[in-house]
Image 1 (cartoon, rainbow, N blue to C red):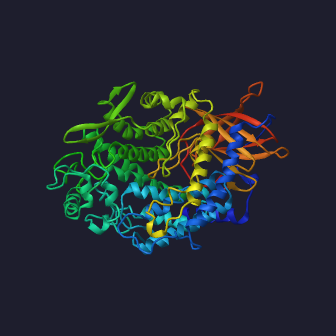
Image 2 (tube, rainbow, N blue to C red):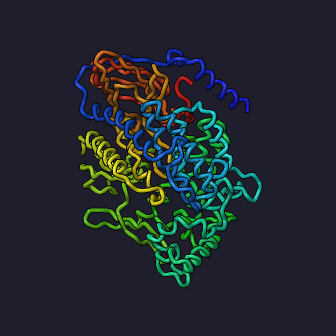
Image 3 (cartoon, rainbow, N blue to C red):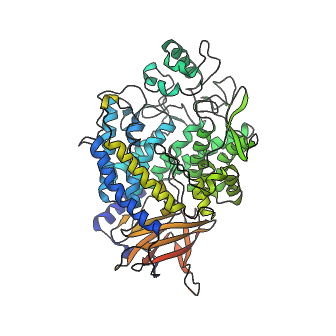
Length: 621
């Protein structure tokens, strides 16, 4: 307790006294000069950074009230929806953390309070946390919350919430506990501030039924139910609901691994080991279940910790499991989130064996047609089925964490070869997944990718602004996804180019990156104004990055940190074109680069990855 209290006081003093970068202990600073005309990608990057601010303000002005609530209906039933409210603005604090205006960070916090208030009144949120939903939807919502730690770790309100939300997943010894410490299980797929939701009502599912009608049935043996469309037939829906309550709602599912991000969020505010220990023990519990189930992750664990306990002994058939509704996608996302978080706090890459087990299971029964690898996305009593290409996004994250040659070759094998060299821009509600061509860029096959991607992001921003301006719908006719489909703050290209990373896993993944930037003069996160950055190469032991100072008369200082959370140790750095080749010793988590006016500087940075405990603290904290 004393250590936590001291940390809070120290952070408050740093913020209050305005200590500058000159007081950062052991800071190495290196001047770099290489005058040149700015490359096109740098101009596009700065243009996008500027334009997103105006786009965000127009979006918020159109759809929100002065108190931060959405201009929408007075009532919203069921358990679904709060995630969609938060998703509408989820990347605003990340935009600020990349270098967007301070106004955006203030606005993001205001909108968070507004959505929390609004969905509390609707009934989905209790005590500022979702009352009881699954961790795919929790993950969508609380990614917004995690980004606050990147934008301002000194915000006591958000820090206190981070602790309180994480505490919901410690075993409190009551029947309302979300977690069972003995069996290392989250006790229901639906969980939250009111504890596990073992019994669902028709009211809980009322707004979600039309969506699930488009998916296969969760079970094929429900008497009188033969089609997904039966979700919309009241008497048949009662039979589906009965089956869900009897088979799915008691015990743990892989989807709950996304909760490790919430625990790690609290850890990076406080440094308290109990959150770290929780992450490691929970991920290890799932690894043990994979081993027990002959190398395949089971999708349902009973309340006594037994695989298939409420599913007639079947290891498949659980909530968001191997069969329903998305199949392999949810297993890959959740296991990659959990394993990456465990790797982040331990430095132990063997935790990646958990998502490897998923890829290995489906790869063993894959097929190849017309040069494309097809993997089964589902499993039930028929065996493996629903063969399709695997989206590059998932194996990309594994390679990015491991940097192993084997994972790189696996990605290349699974990716559509046509996407390796040509951008086929994917638009989503926020789950941007244009990773295949980004990998092709790193491999030298798509040299124009940075320009193409930044242009595509700018175009998507414009398209969403056009949707906003031509939107004549009324609140009563707007569905709960209305705003997130129009959020014009598109960041995937900025994350890839600036930070040298794939975009975070949308359903609750933390943003793992090679680098992070801070403005030491303004004492804030992100690239300074008039600066652009492009990670040109990613190696096992470092990265190559180009820094551009677009200002014609002023030198720009920027702090470069190893990893988003300071987890990587930077050994040394050299300017690539400088002769004779000379490395500057850093031996720290960060260093300062002083870029001369109008210079384009390429740096080769050597680092040892995962050497430090992750933290939200800025270098001057």
